[in-house]
Length: 255
Image (cartoon, rainbow, N blue to C red; front, side, top):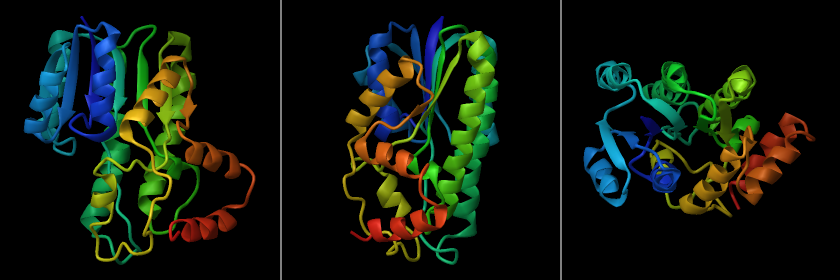
C-alpha cells in the first residue's frame, strides 16, 4: 500500500499539500494534526482514501497511536511532508518559556523523531519534505528561537539528503518567506510584545508556495526557495556578514 503522510495537515501549507497529493495515485493519505474537525473537513475534499490521526505531536501517547499504525500496516511511504511547526515574535523577555520549549520540541525534536520512524517504511523514489523557512538562512532578532530551530531543520535535512541518496530517497527542505493566508503570523504575534516585527511585506499564498515547492521537491531539489523574497534572502546570506544582515532584517520588518 502506497501512502503519503502529512503533519500540520489541517490548515495552511499542510492542507494545500494534501490537495496536491490527490493527483499522485496513492492508496491512502494519512492526515496528522490536532484539530479533528478540520481534518475531517479536509478528508471530504480529497478523493484519495484518508486515515485521520488527530493528535498533538508533543504528546507521546497521541503520537504512539500513529507509530502503532505504521508498524501494523507497514505501508510504503512515498511522501512524508512535515508541515507542523510554529513560531513566536518577541524579545527574550516577551515569550513564555513554555512557548520556547514547544517551538524547539515541535520544530526540531518532533521533526527528527517522526522522520527517523518513517524512513524504514520508505523505498526508492520516496520523498521527504521538511517545511523550514528562509529564516533558516540567518539569525533573526525577535524571531531568534524560531529562526534557530529552522536552521537546525535545514542542516538536518541537507545532511539527510546525502545519507539517503544511495537509497534513492529524496529529502527537500522547503524554505519559503512568510505566507499571508495561514495562521502563522497571528500565532507568532500572540506574545507580550510583538511590535518589533510589524509587517511581512511581499508575503505569498499557501497555494502558490505549495505548488511551486512540491514541483521542485519531486524534481529532487534539496533546498527550495519557492518565492522571490526567499530566493533573494538565500543569495544575500551567502555574501554579507551576519551582523549586517541582522540589522537589515530589523529595518525590513518595520517597512
